[in-house]
Amino acid sequence: MDERETIERVARWLKASRNTVVLTGAGISTESGIPDFRGPQGVWTRDPEAEKRANIQHFMASRDARVASWKYRRASTVDAALPNAGHFALAELERKGKLQTLITQNIDSLHIKAGNSLARLVEIHGTVRDFVCMGCGERGPIDRVIARVEAGEEDPPCRTCGGILKSATISFGQNLVAEDLERAQSAASSCEVFLAIGTSLTVTPVALLPRYALQAGAKFVILNAQPTPYDRAAAAVIRGPIGEVLPAIVNLV
Image (cartoon, rainbow, N blue to C red; front, side, top):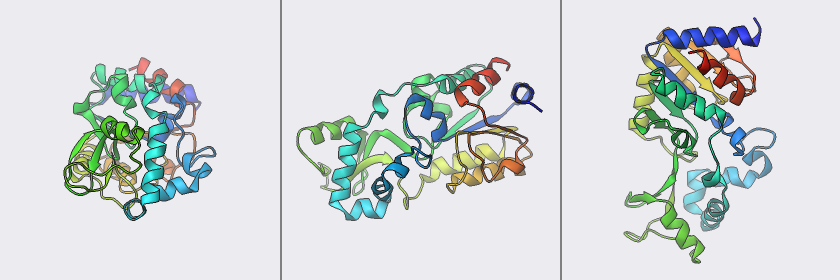
């Protein structure tokens, strides 16, 4: 079956589905200029130290790691990134009433910028929009902390308790927010179609979500440039560019 036939088949499944869940990973945002992590030009491929900083134990124990992290965050282009055709296609799928839950591993807020609603979005790995204090749990817009970094504070402490601040993202070694994980698992367990887009499906516990969908008898579709551990279990696998394939699917729904 060629790609066009597969696109048409997936569109028919989506059109008939009463409960569709989409899981997105870094691959959907690369066309917006945000590099992935493990690809040939990935953040961690080019800078192994950045992967160390993504470990919560290292971040908490090392002031140098926190200084480097805030310096990187200040210079990050994520805030300036704009949604691409893939993001807009998922917003359109929601407007058509054919997207019940959107689970993203991304922290870039591009789904929100594209028009998806917060009510249907599960940011399973957190967001760079906010900061959180690791001591007292205070949370707020990250711009407040970035302003302090720009003013000369290399590792700004919490103004309430003096604790360590970090972006409200989930680092390696850090537990997911239980409510978010439960919501994602529940959605996958009750869906009729499950689309995995731009994700390697290797990072647990998110990588286990397709199992819930398969156990529920859902049509499982993978749209990803590289092979995944679930390819053989999928009802359809598409390797084409997300920004081209996803709009083509949604236009037929």
